[in-house]
Amino acid sequence: MRLVDTHSHIHDPEFGRGPADADAAVARAQAAGVTLIVTLGVDRADSEAAVALAGRHPGAVLAAVGVHPHAAKDAGDDDLDALEALARDPRVALIGEIGLDFYRNLSPRDDQMRVMRRQLDTARRVAKPVAVHAREAHDEVLPLLAAWSREMGGRLPGGRPLGVMHYFSAGADHARRYIELGFVISVHTSVTHPKATQLAAVVRDTPLEHLVLETDSPYGAPQRYRGTRNEPAYVAEAAGRVAEIKGISIEEVAETTTRNAERLLGAGAMHESAVLQTARHARD
Figure 1: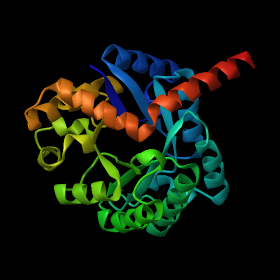
Figure 2 (figure 1 turned 180 degrees about the vertical axis):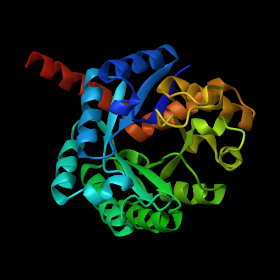
Figure 3 (figure 1 turned 180 degrees about the horizontal axis):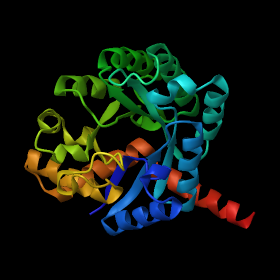
Figure 4 (figure 1 turned 90 degrees about the vertical axis):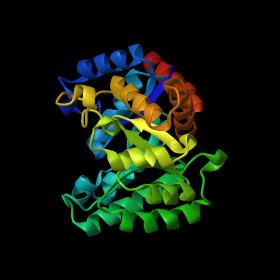
């Protein structure tokens, strides 16, 4: 059984004791059947660290680069230019974590909108999908993504999805709208929590071919590990709960969501390119 964790932050120093701890988490995930992990940046320096971790684990870890809405107020044009250059690295699968967060409002809304629009432009120019954070902001995120989807023709080259709605927090009607725009819906390990009734309804009502799985490590551990640090190995908990909700086998969930994730990430070609680049770096 193969699984993909489409959203984590295991490169972040807050994950644990540093690089060695992240490397150990990758090993535990591989032992649990997780064949690919995406680790996402939240600002310029953090994105560089994500790419560095992907470089240490070619074929097992891919990176995403971007500015989280919480960090938008500190992101200048030079940072966004540098991230666009970094986004062209073959180890980078996604532009993210980008989006809007009107729940905590740690950055002014105008800054959040400015930075998200610029990063959608980056994604268009580098032809890579986006990982979108939307919290208490779907009324604003939907029209932004609708306009971008029209500009992009609803798909990336090769028919790949435009992006993924990370840690999905809206209802089934919103999920259908995002899918119509060319996005997939990410089911977080919190789907295992007893109070996650809205997310469970989204899983029930959304066809499996539009779903992927994530942990958002180190945050939001599944119910079995509640109160401890989340990590990519636990993405299997989300797969199991999706199987229960849909009344199908966990093997079917794993197979389909992994295929969905690989299509989103362009994972096959990216793996080969990243391995070749890492080998060149080692020779140099």
